[in-house]
Length: 195
Length: 126
Image (cartoon, rainbow over all chains, first blue to last red; front, top):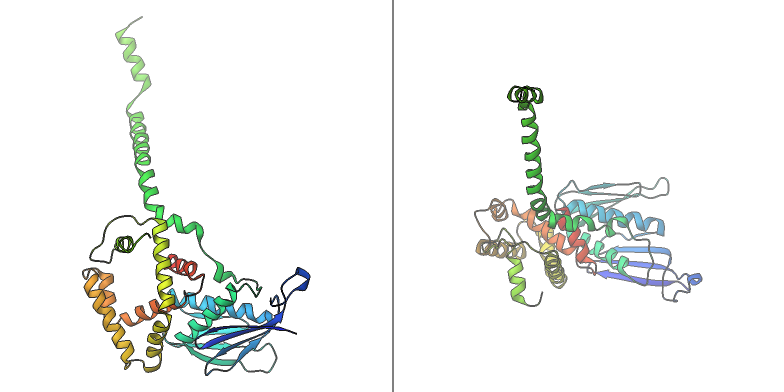
């Protein structure tokens, strides 16, 4: 008997079907071996596939939404899925079948369906009942940059004054080397003390 | 954030505001503001969804969209420094549609439990 878990967000719902991994002593309501998944968006054709398709599709949605927000050209292309923006409100999804001689499925969705779908994927990622390899994109948080950005000004203010002081000291000393002639100085000393 | 007054004070670290205070915002205050924003967007998600939907379906002639845009412009006029070029851009009727849609979409994508981390990432990439 297979387990079934659903994640809903307004117009989108994601269904995960699979089995627990009994070799890891998992609970019977857990899903670790996903056999099938179904993504339903209201008024749109059903999207379904196997586990190997779920990761790339989730990545595609995450990367595309990041591009969309960052004001870059929102276009994502891969072997399995292409997503392109028609305009600011409409997004074109082309799902390519792995089977030969099957035309790609074209689905047009709006911003609301896009955010609902991504929220379903977020729920799946956060669910303790489903074990799925987390996508690279959704988990990337630039920890090092966070404090670097905020403390950047303070660090520069701290390091700049001594740096300028040392640099000007070296510059002045190197200029005086050109004016000082040790031979001339020696001759002068000899003239003063002729011994 | 111990109380609302602290939130108000930290909120004034925004240089676009009229009542801008030039005090460096601390990392924990910045994190707290993000958390407040994400919690609010989770609570307001159905409304944000309706506003985005109204623009998708009716494009120019939506009552919901025009009401929201009017209120948005009013608040910006009231609280932000209108001499700033960035604020002028926010108030520009022909250009601000895109900014509003992008902002609403960003908030809509950060309503999950890990929405705080997502929002932080979006802000650093901005």
